[in-house]
Length: 264
Image 1 (tube, rainbow, N blue to C red):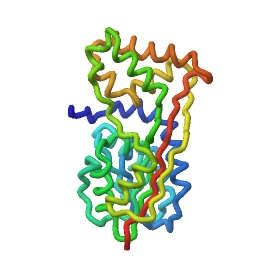
Image 2 (image 1 turned 90 degrees about the vertical axis):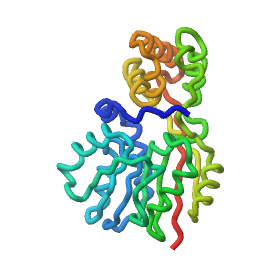
Image 3 (image 1 turned 90 degrees about the horizontal axis):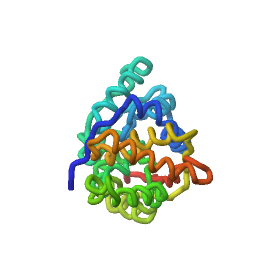
Image 4 (image 1 turned 135 degrees about the vertical axis):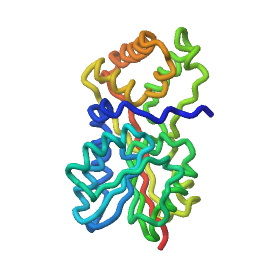
């Protein structure tokens, strides 16, 4: 399997990640915290949701982990002036975390679906938790962006895009609730709760929609197209189809909610 590019346009992502911030706030609302816990933010991105988590931990600490150096740099710029020593940053693959029984909880949103091997991911998260520690997370789930991805597949098979994308395997794992629960239990978790919910995201027009696709959803696709002109044509073709939808420029997101605990 081809190694996916690890870097992001973190500045653009920080501006465009309103849907991810909204989802993150909803997941945070599930937590019941004392306020002094040590929590792993698994896939922190640019730190917008991390800041919300830190606000819930006035006497606690967060270790923000991401695979992207760019994301961590933006997160550090965003968070350190406000939270100082209460937040630390670690560049790491979530499948190979350098932690052993270090955290009271693991939190994550909009990141786990970028890891293809969820068995390995959940084992790493389990190992990072202290006995009795909790996992509370959300990621893309089965059916996520199905309408968009059907259009991407159709375009990818046609010229001039086929020579770059026809053989390209999508980089995500969008699991069903049942498969996710099975994997969590196999990793050792108990009190497992999983569900798929619909969470559509709407955009104001073609420019915002295509910028979001290029920066977030289809980042690894467009990076395979060497010509800026052809990349633009590809995104514009998707925008033209989205403009005819009702409502227009909406992504049919499905989110996989995950809650579990490591045994005492």
